[in-house]
Length: 555
Ligand code: TEU
Ligand code: CA
Image 1 (tube, rainbow, N blue to C red):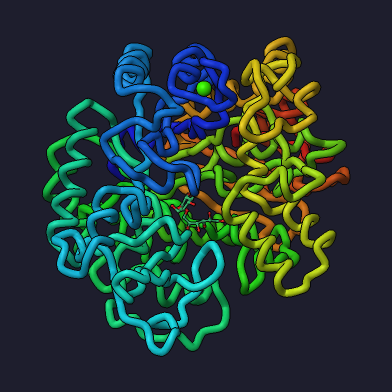
Image 2: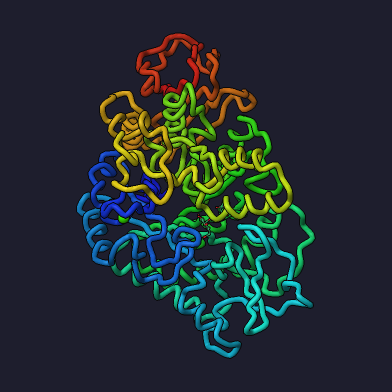
């Protein structure tokens, strides 16, 4: 197994809009991040990933880019960015940017040109097709509801947008588009950034015949129609050869439709595509065939199995990334833990899971203090385009909207986008004025200042766990072996290499549980780290576990 810095890294993901507002206009910004650099450093993380910071009309909060080489006005200036990068490096940290290459904004100059006429040189930067008798060119549904085709009256043609109609898909078949992309990547790499998170990357290559689909389930359509198109590997390999091979940087590909087999293709070392990819196996658990707002039950054995399958897939080829939440999903403690009575214990248990798996670890802002989902009373308090459009669609279909709002409470992407909770002052210390999105009212109890004052806080447990991972490389590179696969409450596994063997025991339940250990009780079991402060030696061959207790033993 090749050892490199990015495999050993813990990445801290920042959603700049909601992190810290330095100029008090209600929107987080780059200077806000600069102000918090000591805090970020104190976590022990290695890399900062910034969600998109480029010029954007913010139809999808920066994932609709109108200028790839300018900073979003609300976030600051290029000088602020240069200063941030410098401070990050001076603190021994690295910085990666979020690159959205599947689509631009409709306000990008390329699209403004393309829209002008059919013979404009930029027309071929996007996918345009004729419809039939007032119908779009095919029946594909968009991620953000409605058709993927938007009609352009002046040319009597439709353009393709897998996401919102303000996010037209780029035509990667066109070599000029790929050249532009290579150039803009070099622009940032030459500034000295340390890599990219590449947005929606499995979607960039399309079947340009755009056939109708007969599939009914949206998740199946993603997997079988939208993701991993005919030329996707060629395009990514070209990025590697033309651009990335000149720099020592890290790449993580993001997007739906990545199976374990496909992940090996994207991340296999000899293939020279990406370093790692995010998969959504565990995060799509609990989604029915129609996606996020179609909620179905899930079980712990299914959850554990996803980790086992993925670890195996990348054991000898490629490399995994480990994450339990990001800006697109509910808060991890609300989703996988218990954000009520056992919020702190379960947040720490999840920290232990996150930091004891094989792969590059990604920690999302606010999860390190156990921030939870929010439940706004009115749909008007939600800003996320996916939430708003899903609600509109439900209203049109005559659904029970009170019921739908409850699903929004559980599923909305805005759960992860409420302002970072720094302290108990008004607006949670995020800003002096009302923020662009309301704070979660629980900031009075859940905040950084509170955590700093308590040695046993979630935050301090994260710091300990990150340090523990650094000191035990077995957790980074060692093999993974799942035990008690069918147990509905306990997630138990071994991590081991030639020199060390560790046992991780996580009680994913509100109940006390006993566990008979598979190991010989006559050999002492040393508890190395625990969320119940039980760092003592064991001599029994069984364990009594408190609700949401999480321990790592040395065997
Ligand atoms: O998300 C890509 C993606 O596949 C989404 O469908 C994701 O599964 C969805 O947000 C779940 O609800 C990326 C970004 O992370 C997301 O914020 C953007 O909205 C999207 O691309 C479009 O750029
Ligand atoms: Ca601001």
